Image 1 (cartoon, rainbow, N blue to C red):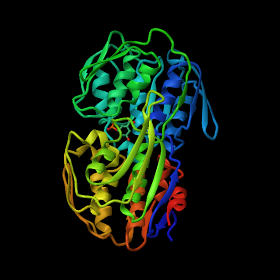
Image 2 (image 1 turned 120 degrees about the horizontal axis):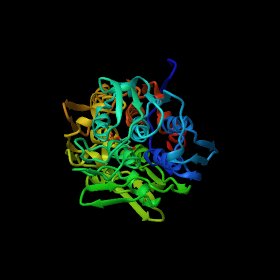
Image 3 (image 1 turned 135 degrees about the vertical axis):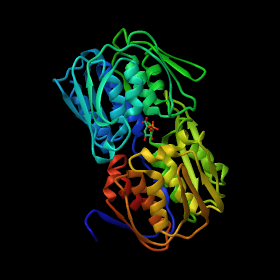
Image 4 (image 1 turned 90 degrees about the vertical axis):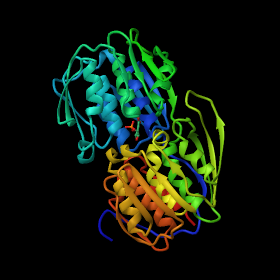
Length: 429
Ligand code: S3P
């Protein structure tokens, strides 16, 4: 086997109870708000993938202290108005778009100059979408054609009214966070709702944020917020891979505990239920993010349709939904998904290329794909394209294909799910 290539062999079924990693989006935000708060915070069940570690490394640069245990991270911060940095402080955001875009909202209002940079994949991703609204707030940037590295100069921010041209939680969050250091009110209107973890966390911490119709309004942070304790629910986007395995392999049953059931994140579960999936959720709301258990059993599925207004609610689940569609009866159409082209990889091109290699009947469109099923998949060798969600989708393809699937650069799963392959070995039969 070539170095950094793994082989996934076909499985008969998957069974068991799965402990998932903490939600990645919520983990980034819990750390960022612990750095905004003044004093000590404690975060439990943090996602410890490489992306979240990038956020920790960046926040250490502004004087925030972290003590990382197995399940708990203790944070001690001087608070948003006490962040310190050397001149031209360099922040390595690695592969993480969320780290980059959320910090780009908080750094312009600081008194030091910063430079955000990242790996090859992150350096290809568009930053114009944050530069444009934040510049309207008086932030001063220097970038290479809207890409990293991004230099951020200290500036005096002012509030704005802004309507998001792309449905992006990262952009929405960057503006709302910048609003904490801006003079006057900051209003962000989202034509299509996308994940709302930043807003929920602001409310939980008593930060003045209000919603009227589809517009969020935030005021500058006048008083320091105190440290807090927070339990991160499990990641529904990581759950999606095991949901797919259980649905597609006969006589399978899996249980996923304490998964975030935030409605802005689980559109894929609702879509699959409509397509015939036996998925049951028991919801418990014990915190500011709803969460509960999910039980999934093998199911016969029908093809489904996804259009632009559904995309934000299942943006990260499209590659695994495309794999599921290869085994569903009839045609699946995914359109209005152009945003996928600017993720960790061009996920329209990479999903189509990988599934075609394994024998799927799939056509690429500029803004999506059409899949005809059911088509048995054969084995083959596929690339992960530096994209954790493509690597995990291909691992599930390996379980359901007739022959082994070799995945090049499989270790990219560490970005969001370091225990992915050991979990796979535990539940496969
Ligand atoms: C994220 C938002 C989404 C998602 C990404 C995480 C977040 O990106 O794809 O994995 O944590 O806010 P966009 O907001 O750019 O759509």
